[in-house]
Image (tube, rainbow, N blue to C red; front, side):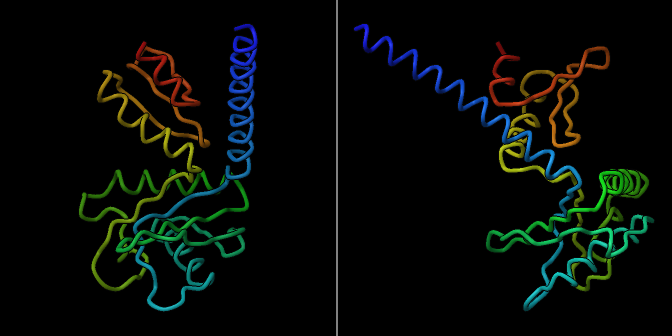
Length: 194
């Protein structure tokens, strides 16, 4: 029994260490991706799509948002593999966090001023064919994206008013007068329920 008890304690310590290491990795990934944005729902070019094609999309999205983005402002750009029938996400890493924030702010501002059918879409960036809405958001790694999906549902189920992501960190706020709550893991959401 004492041996089992010792193993249970060791297992619990290992779980805590693993969780700590996962949080450190998450923090490093956030830091590495802090100047990165994703562009969703942009149709892929037929045939082979080059980096130049993707830079064209990013710079013309900037033009559609009344924001100058030069090719030299883009450190890296690529399209993630997609599920069949959907356009893969275009991930663009900018040379500065300030430019990333400017692009996000310009997209929010532009879309808030336009009617629903004229929000940022594929025709604004010169892509022919059916008009498709374009979504511009901060790039989140897989773990953070999963937590954000849960955080989006949480206010509906638990009477919270706000949820948002900034600098790859997720926040909730119960109402206008309450403090913002940083959501690091799924456990944070479970603790709020309890």
